[in-house]
Length: 127
Image (cartoon, rainbow, N blue to C red; front, side, top):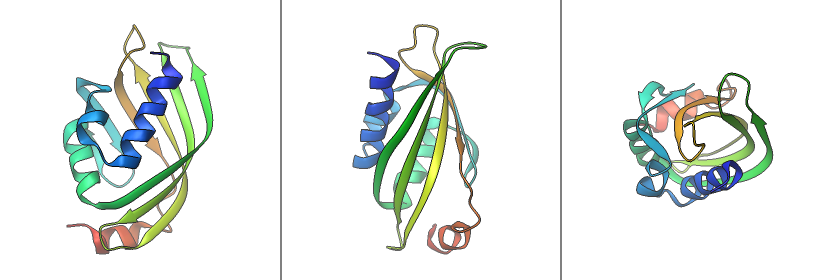
């Protein structure tokens, strides 16, 4: 699988809320750094994200393939996130992935977006 296909599978898993499909793309010890959830292991992050989500829809804008310092790729996309409360929040997001040496799985993801306009809705909606 190419790194772009890996990212397409990731976005498809987000859109469908398929925990097993998303986790299959990560190493067992993968870490997630998120502006709203903090630094977590991938399993606990995506379990909580999907529990807090009624619906996700992404639109891929750009893919950046970077290789300085090890295999990495970044996705720039629009995210329409319907929270568990039913509130829709829309924003642009960049996910930066560190890949395994064979570029077949994610070792780490750093999620980057501005939370100022959605933090209050998220906190009101989360468990």
